[in-house]
Each structure stands twice: as C-alpha cells, then as structure tokens.
Length: 320
Picture 1 (cartoon, rainbow, N blue to C red):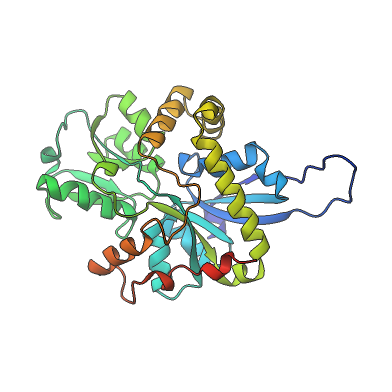
Picture 2 (picture 1 turned 90 degrees about the vertical axis):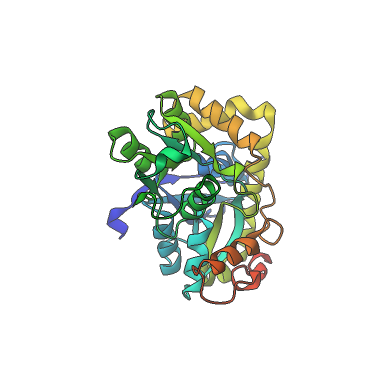
C-alpha cells in the first residue's frame, strides 16, 4: 500500500533564540491526509508556514492516501501515527476493533457544495443521473442523503459512483463521466467559475454533527503524549491564525501555493470557510457533537456496537 500513496514532507526544525543552546532532535509525526492540494489541511499548512511547528520542535511528515478510509487503514496499521479525514471512517475503524481513537475535531462544519452539469439547475433534475461521492460509508454519503431527501429525491432515484477525494470527483465532472458531485473548496470554487451549476451547500442541511477530525494510533499515542500535546497546540494556533481576518491575504497565499490554485479561488475559499464557521480552535469532540454523529451512524446500521462517545474518544491520551 505504501507504494500507492504519494508522499510529501512538511519539515520544521527548532528555532533557537538568544544564547545558543544544544540542539535537541526534532520529533517527527507521520500524518495521513486525503489526496493532495486540499484546503482541508489549511491550519496544518499554516502551522508549518508560520513556524508554529518549529517552535514546538516538530517535523510533520505528511503522507497522501486516495480516500479517508485508506487513511484510517494507515493509522490502524501504524504506518502513520495520526490521520486526518472524514469522521465516519474513523468511527467505522474503531467500531471494527482497530486500535484508533479520535484525537480532535478539525472541521466542525461541512464546506461541501453540490455541483452539477450546467444543464442541471435543480435537485429534481438529478433523478436518473450519476452522482459521485467519497464512498459507500464516507461522510459524503450522509451529506448526500440529507440534501436530497428534503428535495424528494430518494436512494434508487439516481446512480452512485465513488471517488475518495474532491480533486478526483472534480476531474470526473469535468470529463463528463458524472452528472453531479459534492466538492470541497477550492475545487468547488473552480467548478463554479467554469460554469458548473451550484445546487446547494451541505452546511444548509447538516448542522448537528462535525465534518472531519484527526485520529491517532492508540498504541503510538500512549507512548507519545508529549508529542501529541505539542501537535494539538500547533493545530490550535494554526486555526486561530487562519480565522483572524487580518491574516486573510497571507493565508490565501499559503493555500494557493500549496494547492496550486488561483489566488482568487483561494480567497473565495477563505470567505466560505468563515461564512460557515468551519474550524474550531479547541476541536473538543465532547463539545462539538461527535456523539450525535456516532448515534446517526448507529441509526442507519453503519455502527454495530455501542455508540457512546467514550468508545471512540479517549481523553486520557491528551494528558502528558
């Protein structure tokens, strides 16, 4: 599996201020993410670009996998220590007995936009069409159901194909292989600019549970509590910095450089993320509705065991 993933490294070394002191070896954290060039990892990109990782003596070794489920497989196997992705995949892994725990919430609100071919101007026109989502148990499955059901579109009224990352689904939409899909920025912004029809926002339909989070290999976590504490700090700092309006221009530059997207698209992405209040600085699972999500998955049969929060989130891992 390692050969099938694309690897890139965000490195940071300790900054010494004042009187020189003996340098300590930086701690490396291998982190799995979905795809490449995603705005989902914006706080982490900022943590490196602004030196927060340096200050905490961390090196972030970031590994890209084709889907959120694949990331969780990497976390469970120990190939990566921490994973970022859709929370249902984390919860499914734990439900199936994987040695994984939710670490923190990354995005509390979903930024997905339903985009369709220009000829499709309403949800009703999706009957008989091909819609692409991330996977059969991906969080985009929950979002799709909650967007279509109020518009009288039921499972079976359309065909579904799967592609794990927004970039792959956007490419399929451009190629005409699908009729509609859920895309996250900056791909959704680019799609609108190219003339694809915007049908709606997931944030208008789903408000009761969070979107993405960080998971951690439980065995690794118990041996690296101090490293986890420092990682949690840099994500909080990156999130807080991103949300400050005075940092918008620089944040846009950081995202545009990493994702190789048009700065105007990156700026619109920032505007949208702030509009839906996407990121939470603290990211506390017990405060941001994780148990609501576990119970929603339990109700549709995606979780077979106990759906209480304590089964999926071990707060003791956060105590050095």
